[in-house]
Length: 386
Image 1 (spheres, rainbow, N blue to C red):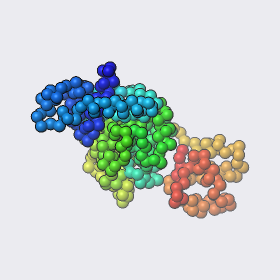
Image 2 (spheres, helix red, strand yellow; image 1 turned 135 degrees about the vertical axis):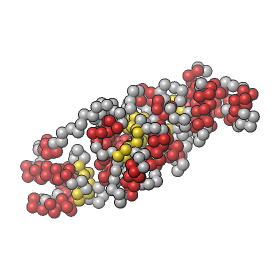
Image 3 (cartoon, rainbow, N blue to C red; image 1 turned 135 degrees about the horizontal axis):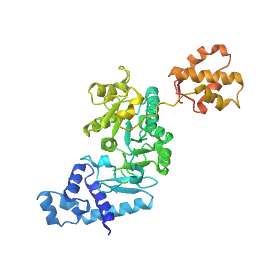
C-alpha cells in the first residue's frame, strides 16, 4: 500500500479510536512523526511506547486499519474525501492546536487544501435565536469582510440563526464558506439546511467538514467538539449574539484560549441575546466590534475598500421604472429610504406615516420585498437589505 494512502488510513483510524481524546492521537503522531508509524510497530514496541498497562496495543490493530480502509473507500465512491493532520491540505491553523483532530472528513467539489489555499479564515458564530438586529449586522459584517483585500472565507457551524445567516451571506458576497458539522459527513444537521448543504458542496469555494465518523448522529456534547474546530482553524472569531451560556460563547472562549482574535458585537444591556457578547467585552476576552472600517485592521485582513456608495432611490427607480406608474414608483422610493433610516419600523407605523399617499402599502412593500430591497419579519417589522 502506498505511503500516502496508508498515512490517511492510519490518521482515520487514530481519529476514530481517540475521538474524544484528540490530544492522545496528536501526541502519538508528534512522537513518531506520522500516523502510520504507530501501526508499523509490533506489540512489544507499542508497550514500550505506551507503558505496560496501556490499552494501546489492543486498540491499534490491523482490524481497525481495515475498517478505516473500507470506510474511506466507501466515502470516496460517494464523492467524499478525508484529509489527515500530516497532509498539506489540512487547515494550517488547526494543525497548531494540541487538541486538533487526527483527520477531517470532507464534502466538497475539490480537495480541501485547494479550497483553503492561501485563504484567511474567519469564524462568525452566535445564537440560534437571532434577532433582527443580529441578522442585519451579521450580514453587514460579512459584506464588510468581503471588501477587505484578503477576502477571507467564513467558517461556522451550519446551525440555524447566526451560523446559517453568516454562511449564506458569505456565499452571496463571493467569500466562500466552510461548514463544520456535528454529525458524520454523510448527514446534514439540521435537516432543514439540506438544500444549502448541496449548494455549498457544489461550489469550488466552499466545503463541509467534520471529524465525526460516518453514521454519527448529533448529540448535545458533540457541539463543543465541533466548536473547537471552528475556533481552531480561524484566525479570528466574531460573536454576533449569544446568551451568557451557549455554543457561540464556547467557540469564542476556545478561540481566545488558542490565542486568536475575538470580536463581539455589543448589544443592549437588557437584551439576553447580547448578554454573552457584552460579558466577553467587559472581561476583555473580546474586542468590541463598533466600526466596520476597523474589521480589516482587527483581523489583519489588509486594506478595506470602504462602504460602497448607496443610491437606494436610484436602485429602486432602475428596478421598477419600466413596470410601475410614476406615483407608485415615487412611493416605493420614499418607503425604501424611510426603512433604511428606521430599522425595525413596523408596517403599521409606515401606514400612519404615509397615510396621505392614499394608497395601501401592501403592494409596494411586497414588490420591494420580492426584489430583495426590504425584509419584513413575522411581527411586521421592516429592515433594508441593500
